[in-house]
Image (tube, rainbow, N blue to C red; front, side, top):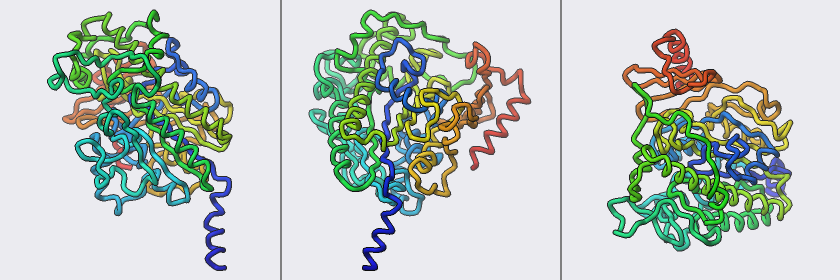
Length: 464
């Protein structure tokens, strides 16, 4: 009798607890209709923005997948490298719990499908499928990646159409392996179709259980290679795209780079930095991948409706970082410019007032862990340093706070009006976002007092 009473008391906090659906989309900049890119077809994500709160100035902690996801999943700053979570894994028992581990310890079933941590499926080894090398020990009840014809998670991450796997240029056969594809076929022609198939199956299983769930679904596109089923390219065949803003390489000390990740697969004999027609082609293929990813989001939402659980499910849509499409003469991420660091964030929950009204308050990925605790009615771990976004959900005009991002060699502070970038060795960049030239004109030498003030703020925040 006593054990039964304990069981009843232990489960009381779960009665009526909301489910959580976290949708992670790889390399998705705010290239969405609801974020102002009106030539983009993104009806399902747009519908989320209408139902909840879109954060138009959300910034990630690092402009690379693994390091950005580290912050999402731990609520802390971490390494700037892609293997940040693998570095953490051996020390798991002595560290505070991750986001899914925290929910798991409070009675949630936690499931990950696709690319949620850095490796889809969350395992290490040459093909990312070795159970003895978990990326996040103790965090997920199930950590899944259906590879299908792509053989293994590494193959799915680099998947071309119908089971073909992308390779580096020097490893390619003499035949062209087109990194920009538009192949006829169903959604399962590319790996994300299988990822969402499994996510829908998991939703059915989770709904049939008597516990709340935390399901994270990680969509790979629009990450390279830019391939999607042909039907998603159709809206862009004859589309006229807006000009690329500030397309020139910046002068002076910056975090500009040579677009190495993009150019490493250069078997097409063209360079978008020098060929405007090819640049447009690349942008259209990126857009097709966004629309393909949006369709997968739509499938998830339709399943919630079919199961009748959308109203009891907190939905978070999160992009792991931005992506340059020619701005600053960069094709890729890895820089500390706005295009690398700003990504879409949308939250749907009962706490959202004035749904459909976006907020331009500056926030960061660090804030999601405490926000999800508040929305789910769970206690907030004391080690978290982010700020709950409940004020912005209640009032889109509520102020935000400065956001920090970093790479190996520099760190940046974004405020509502300025961006400061501090390089190792004492060099600074200062940009005024109230002016049209924004991140094209470095004002650091003209405004040394402001540099000093912002750098002081940066140093205080980074040592929290």
